[in-house]
Length: 635
Image 1 (cartoon, rainbow, N blue to C red):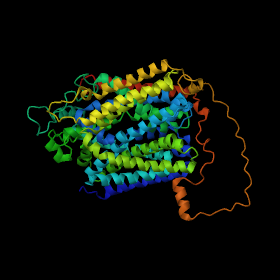
Image 2: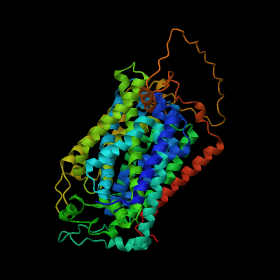
Image 3: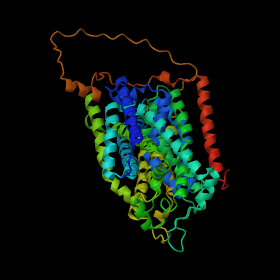
C-alpha cells in the first residue's frame, strides 16, 4: 500500500477544510429556501464563478484518467475534442443563451415545451434521455475513473473508493444547491489547474521538452508484443490531430461533420452546462463567463493530453503494454493500461509531499463534476417530471424530492460500474465520446432547429427525435453485443458496428434534421405564441438602453393574529432545517429567480468586448487545428 507522509496528509486535510469552508459560506449566503434559489442559485452569479463552474463541470476525473489515457494510447488527436469545446462555448454564448434567457426557463426540456406548445411528450422524452446519458457517460464513468486513481495511489478496493467519493460529494450537493456547487467549482478550478500545471511542467522537464517527446514517444515500443504485428507500437500519426478519413481513429470528415453535432449537445443543449450559465445575473455576465471558460479549455491539450504521451514514453512496457497477459498483470485490464497513465505519472514523478496534493487535485476534479451532474439531474427530475404527478407539490416537497433523486441516480450509477469495466476497453475517454455520439446528435439537431427555424413544429421535432434516437440505440446495442477483437486478430463484426462512430453520428444528425423538416413542412405551422421569445429571430433585443425599472409596490403585512402561538422548535429540528435550507422557505417562489429583462441589455462596449474575445477564441481553435493537423513536427 502506498504510504502518505505528514505533508501528504496535511495537503488532503487542507483541501477538505477549504471545501467545507466554501460550502458553509455558500449555505449562509445562498437562497436555498426556494426551488429557483436552490436549483438556479437565485440568478445572481457573476461571470468569474460561472465561467469557472462551466470549466470545472467538464473537467472531471474522467479527463485526468480518460483524456490523459487516450493521449498515451494514440497521441494528440484526442485534443481535438478540447479545441472543439472552445468554439462551441462561443456558439452557446451568442446563439443559444440569449434565447434561453429571453424565454425565461429553468431547464432545457422546459424550453422545448414553451417553444413547441403544451404537449408534454418532448419535455419528458428529453428529460429521460438526458438522465440516461448522465448515467451512461457521466456519473458512473466519473466514479470509476476517480476510484481507479485512488485505488492505484492508495491500494484501496474499487467499491470502497466509490463509497468514500460519494460521501464526500453528497454533503455539498444535497445541502447547498447550485450556489454551493458554483462556489466550490471555483475553488476546484484553481486547485485542478495548479496541480495539473505542476505535473505537466515536471513531465516536460523529465522527457526533455517537445523535441525529447517527439523522439521518445515514437520509440516507446514495449518489449512484449504479439509476433508479426505492430501491436503496442505508437501510431504513425500520433502527432497529427485530425487524421486520415479512412485509416485514422479521428477522421477529419467524421470529426467536423459528425463529432461537432455530438459536442453541440454537450455544450449548447445539456442541462449541466446551460444551468450554470442561466445562473448568471445578466446576458453580459453569461457571455463573459463562456469567454473565460473558452480560454481555460485551451489548456487541457497541454496539461493533460501531452503529459499522457510523456507517461507512455517514460513507461513503454507498462503504460504501453501490448499483450493481454502483460496488461492484466500490471493494471488488471486485458484491453490496455493507458487509463492509469496519470496515476503512474504522479506516483513516479512527484517529490515527497506532493502525492497528497495530487490526490486533492483528483478529488477536486471528481467532486466538481459529480456535484454538477447531481444538481442538474435532480433539477430535471424535480422541475420537469415530479410536478406532472404532484401538481400541488409545495416548495418543501420539491426540495426533498430533488435531494432524494440524487441518491437514486447514485445507486443506479454504482450498479453500472461493473459494465463499464468490461465495455470501456483501454480508452475511457473514447468510450464516453462513442456512447454520446449514439444518443446526442438527434438532441443537438432538434435544439438547433428550434432556436434558428421558426417554422419547425412539435410534430416534426418529436418524430425527428424518435427517428434519430432509434437508429442510435440500435448501433449502441450492437456495439455492446460485439466486443472489439484484440490487436492482431481479424475483425469479423458487421459493417454497421465497424463504421466509425463519428461517421454514424453524421447519419443520426442529418436523419433527424430531414425527418423534422419534412414532418413540419407537411403539418401545421407553429402558433405565434410558441415563437414569442423562443427563437433567435424573435427574442427580445435590448441594445440601445436598459428598460425603465418599475418602482416596487410596498407590501402590506397583515398584523399577527393574537390567536396564533409561536412554537419553539427543538434544537435538532432547527439544525435539520438549516442544513436542508428549509428555514424561511419562500412563499413567492414564482417571483424567485424570475428573469428581469434588464439583464438582456448590453452596452455597446461590452458587446464588442465579448465579441472580440469570442472571435479570438474561435480563431485560436481553428489555427491550432491547422497547425496540429498539418503532419509536420512543430518545434
